Image (cartoon, rainbow, N blue to C red; front, side):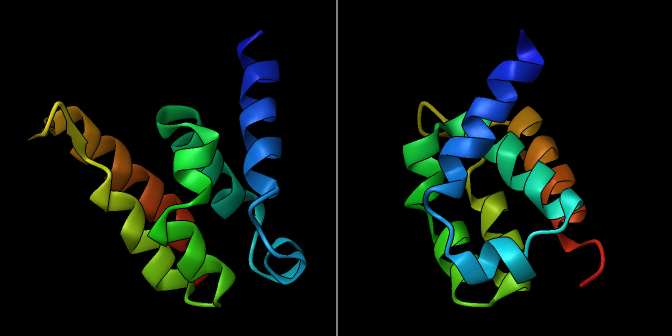
Amino acid sequence: MLGRRLLEFRSGLHGYLTADTKSRRLPYTRDAAYGSFAYNVGVAGAGKSTAVKRLNAGDIAGGCEALTWWNKAGGRVLRGLVARRAEERDMCLLGV
């Protein structure tokens, strides 16, 4: 069930990506990083984020770095979210 749910979030996020991004800027590792991000913050939050805007504009490194900005809950930086976003950023940057 979790696998299906993750695919739903990934598919929803793809609605915010340009055709060029999907065909040229989205290898499996980057797709997984952004899919994890969307699962955690929601499809709309992820889709409207600076991370996705930068990726769509061709700024892959900038988009990957912007993932790390989502490290707060209740207005406080949480160590667990810092670690999660760092892992997503590292996965996102593979091959850049």
